[in-house]
Length: 302
Image (cartoon, rainbow, N blue to C red):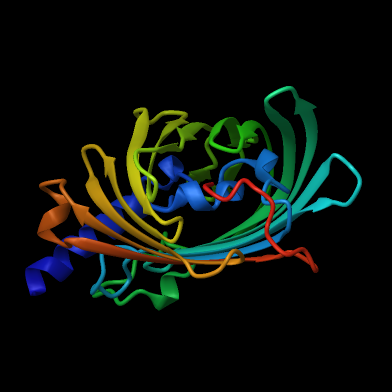
């Protein structure tokens, strides 16, 4: 156990030392909370949609990453506009990020679907509290950090009842935080491409393959490939692969037309990381307020 704790400490310290490579927090259930990566997703559910997601990475270790996200979005009645707001909190060790974003989407009706164009603006607060760290010898060059930086992003999202394709840049502004010791943090540009479809294989079974491609300045291209099996439009069982890091198992329950509950478990494949931890856990709940409508308007598969 001591060796594992030491290993995790090394990972956290490495993250701090190379904080300029920090990326947006990721979720295994990204396909059910599109607003987290694409502002053009605002209003897609055709209802006031509230999604809460909480992720515990490297379960069982003190100081391991944990992330919470709350996203609320809705269409504006009788207008081709969607609005959204998002709150995010990310913590690893004594490092914390809190973010607030406003999202705007303009939707264009097309012959076979809808094209949504979105913008976002927000603020992120980054803090490092070395006073919270348990260290043997204090480093006088380490000072607490508490800085706020702006953010701007854009995206496009095309969708119809059984398919979607999106491209987004949720972080377009590169912001650098400086200290007396030099540059400590640089917020990197992010670009995402997502897509998926749903098709029937029998009367009660559907399959939903989808993917996510992630590009971050200064980092290798990352991708997720996911496949969900849907039974009676109620139970979802999925497997997602994120090479070479992990394989993710997903379970979704469509309790009602308005309420969806999800759980994801990541099993770590990376040889080095697996020495310190094996699993990560993620919980998601989505509720769509339909304001008197008998059913929530499609789409309901993403």
